[in-house]
Length: 285
Length: 285
Image (cartoon, rainbow over all chains, first blue to last red; front, top):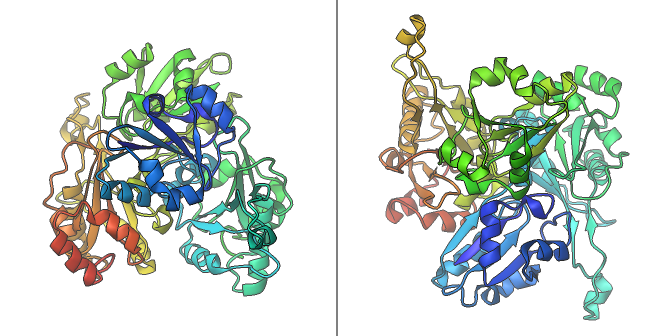
C-alpha cells in the first residue's frame, strides 16, 4: 500500500495520530522535499518518528517513482507531503502510476495553506482562484498571474498568492558544466511578493491594484511564531515578516465588516488601513 | 488560553499530535457540534482523549460564549472544531470575544473540506468561490448560489458545493409551542444536491449547467470508506453515496486533461462521461 501522508504546516507534531501510526509501521518513508518545507529539519522528523526518512527531490518523484513504489504491492510505503498530499501541489501522478502497477493508495489528509490561510480571519468562501508568484529576474517577469487576479478582483473576491520556493536549484553555470552544486534555498517573502505585484501593475497599468490596495501577509501559518500583518501593498513591500514560509492575500471588494474587524487587529498602521478601507482600496486601486 | 483545535474530517485519530496534547491537558474541552460532524460519536472521542467532552450547540457558542471562556485567562480551554477552526465555518467571533476579555487564543490547524476536496484529483488552484446548498422546502428554494456558481462557470473554474446539515432543529410546531423537542439530524446527499441544482436551472434557465454537466460527488472524505463518483448531474441525482457527509464539485471548463484522467477512474459510466466531456459539458450546458 502507498500511503500519502499530509504533515501539516509547521513542525513534527502537526502530523495526525493516524498519519503517525502509518509512518511508524511503513517499510520505507519518503519526504517530498521540493514543493514546500516544514519549519523543522529532517533529523527532527526522524527522531520523532524513530525511523529513517529518505528525501525525495523532484527528480526522484517525477522520473524515479518506480523506486519509490518498488514492492509497494506487498509492503507499506509512506510518502510524506508538507501540508496536504492533494493541497497546493497534488500528487495524483504518483497515485496514477501506483494504480498502473496494481498498487493501492490511501491519503491521510492534513492542513494545507489553501485552507490554513483562514487563520487570517478572511472567509474561505470569499476567495477566488489561487495564484502562484515566481521569483522575477532581470529578464523574466511573468505576469500571467495578473489576469487571473483581475478575474477575482472584478468579482470582488480575495486572492491567495502562494510564494515561490527554490530548493536544490543549480546556477546556469553549474548546470552548463554539469556540476551537481546546488544554490542555497530561497523562499520568497511577503515584501518581495508585494514589490513584484507593484512592478507588474506598473507594467500592465490596468488598475487591478495599486500601492494603497489592502492585503494581508501571513508567515509561518500554524506555527507558534505565526505572524499576520495587514496593510497596503506599499506597506507590505517594506515589512519584515521573518523566516519562511510566507503567503499573501489581496483583499476583495466583498470583504465583510467582520473580516475587516479581524484583520485590522494586525494592521501595520491602523490609520492608513482605515483610510484605504474608506477609499474602497480593498481589491481595486 | 483558548485553544481552537481542528479535528480533521473523519475519526478520532485525525487530530494532530499537537492537538491531542492540548486536549489532554485542557481544563475544559468543548466540541462544536452544529456546523459539521465527525464520523464517530462523542463517546468515542471521550474514550480516545480520556477526558469528558462538552457538546457546544449554536446557542452556547453564539450567546453563551462567556461560559466557554470563563476563567480561560488562567486555565486552558480547548474548543474542538470538525475540520479546521477557520475552515468552512470560521470561529473568529469567539477569538474576538476572547480578546475583549483579555484571553489569548491559539489555533491548531487541520484538514478542512475546503482543501480535503483535493482528494478528487481536481487542482485546488482551479476552484472559484465556494457555495453552500441548503435544503429546499415546498415554499423556499433560494437560488442566490446560482449567481455565484455562474461567475465561476464563466471563468471556467470548478465550484465546491458544501451541503446543508440540520442538527438540533425544532419543527415549527414544537418551536411555536416552546417544546424543546428536536428533529432527527439530516444531512444532504450528493443526489439531493444534484437534484436541487437541476431544479434551480429549470427555474432560472440561464444555462449555467444542465442535466449532462459533469460533476464529482465526494462522501466521507478522508475516511477509510471515502467514496468518489464522477458523472453528469442527472446521473449524480440518482446515485447512492451512503452515509454523510457529502460534497459536490461542478467541473469548470478549464479542467486539465490530468484532472479528467483522474476523475474518470470513478465515473458512474465511462461512456456518458466521455460523451459529456467531448461535448464540453464540463462546467456549462
